[in-house]
Image (cartoon, rainbow, N blue to C red):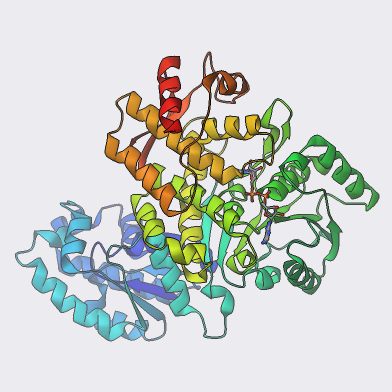
Length: 527
Ligand SMILES: NC(=O)c1ccc[n+]([C@@H]2O[C@H](COP(=O)([O-])OP(=O)(O)OC[C@H]3O[C@@H](n4cnc5c(N)ncnc54)[C@H](O)[C@@H]3O)[C@@H](O)[C@H]2O)c1
């Protein structure tokens, strides 16, 4: 049993809910259990029967939970005052979620469900309990100003035995309506693939779609991990480059799968950049009407974006990604060690997508990229793990809220309406996707300025961020050339729709703009 203790507002319930599925355990919140058992809220019990009566009920419930089957338990803040409970806690693993007094108070606000907040001196209570918590804790985790995901990650690390390497990875869950999968981020994750793969009794073969000669070390690591899992590895090596993201490539892969007798429980693994994972995803979603899929992205762009969220597809001469499916992988392995040989330009291209998350959702990520640009471009593993995990978490949240892009998910296309048109008119493969996205965001910023949505300083921030990363922020683009490609845009409804910022960290989608304003934005992009 793992018990989370801490003062009101420490986040025991939030953290416990996230932690329990990671450890494969049920979650029990003792306050919630008391409320279910008694049919009254904690506040009502305090009010009608007094604190003494509540503590008696609590002692019984807690004793039962601690003696019961393994679980993650969030303990009521005052339960630690009971000597019987304290003895029982000695047999469990106790994690103290520590938060400063002011932050605890801020988090709980004026919650009427917290009866003890009405007492005269909550600070004295806080100080007194802190001493008890520290005395009982096997591990203390500082929760101040940290997102629940980061706290869960640290709790996992603290609970893991020293020799359990896999707990040292950062895990981002994509919680879809009907199932969930993990994006596992770290240095050396690929070697642990065999322990991360979801269980399957029926899979016999693993079809790895990858380019020989690009990441051969990774192929060897992958092969060994698959063999350890008892899976027979098969390598399928399609032609490379954006122009190979086509139905011709897909058909050739179908043929190989058929010839090698791929069954529907066998695994498809996409090991490569966004081109490979888009094609592998499309093939896995359609061959045998769907096969389990694992992505091992080997470009930064793939790790922060393309491999997460389930969009698969190929290009037609008319437009990029015109044919595709939404098909989620069962697991995504983001091993930053695979980025070691990645050319600088490809790292930059991936960082453009990272800044996209900063612009649409998390300004602090933008600050981080600007401050750590040199390390990131030099391939610093810690800095890369951080941006990959943070980007993956943002994408996971947006995708989970709108898997099939009926609304909100469209914000992930910030800069992409311009970018796709730029890529297509330049000719597939002539400009990197991330570079086009950078230019697309710049154009979108000028357009938002034209529409009066943002000020000059936000436009300037776009220019500066792209400059810092060595990405282009000027281009000669003509509306007459871009416009025909927009007729194929999936968001086209009687006119093209843009994703534009309202401020840094907040984007809106489905925005129409008069042609002359788009033309003016493109004019400004030339300067
Ligand atoms: N499905 C999605 O949600 C989504 C999101 C963003 C982008 N995409 C797609 O992703 C594609 C772009 O992906 P990309 O930027 O990864 O390009 P890419 O797949 O073409 O890879 C870029 C280049 O890097 C090489 N490479 C890959 N891994 C390497 C490594 N570890 N070391 C050295 N070289 C390596 C590749 O061979 C290629 O030449 C586009 O087709 C885009 O449409 C899809």
